[in-house]
Amino acid sequence: MKDGWSRKLGYVATKAGASVTFEAKDLQRDVRYVMLDYLKSYGDRWEKSQARFTVSVMKKGEEAYKEVYQFTLDGFHDATASITYSAKEDIGETVVAKVGDSFRLQIELIGGTTFKIMGMMLCNR
Image 1 (cartoon, one colour):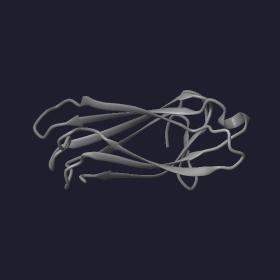
Image 2: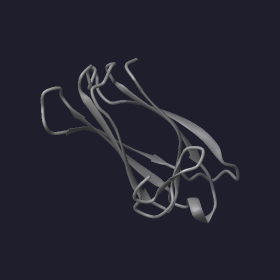
Image 3: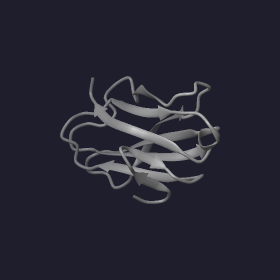
């Protein structure tokens, strides 16, 4: 892992400003949705926890990624329990990344000092 993220039953940001990038080259399936399971928790460590997700696609035959979608998720809540939530982000009205394209998801911790991703899927429906 790099830049403030560790792997412990998911991916956990371990410092303010942490970032990590996932990349899938030469896709074997079209991608329209990013589905995430992430943790919301409470207490000082989770105060103001927020992550920004930036989706970029490099079309087959091109040499550069183009940013196509961005969203944020909060990792803090007022409940006194840690709860896993699911998010399904529609990154385009039509399929954004097609077979043969490359897909990149950059995640940046923009609030707080921790954020936890429990699972991630790239889907076409």
